[in-house]
Image 1 (tube, rainbow, N blue to C red):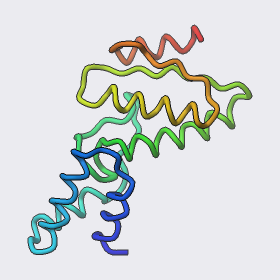
Image 2 (spheres, rainbow, N blue to C red; image 1 turned 45 degrees about the vertical axis):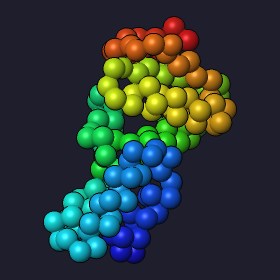
Image 3 (cartoon, one colour; image 1 turned 180 degrees about the vertical axis):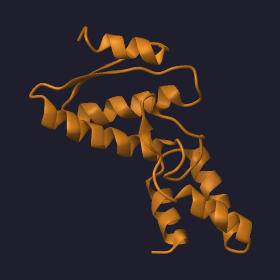
Length: 138
């Protein structure tokens, strides 16, 4: 599969108009510009890793960026893990003031609900550490 096919597949999954437009422009530029092609390749050269502070990365399209497709994929994987771990799984979903954090939280809540996982989304911005403490309450 070429980098262009990988990028087009990603584009087909992206519900976000901003990252879709950004990726469309990059794909078009990469067809005739080696620097743009290198950037496109870098965007799909692996996956953004989940660390001790969760998923962190530059807001951009591709599997190496923070975006709605990547968050949805991670949430789906987490849902499957949680369901295998607990008979009555539940999760607290928090978000902070960073751009799209609330959107990522909403998407995650929808995915968890669809997977049958009770979820408690924060009603407003909350620090990461506070969200961790909330889990012991529910």
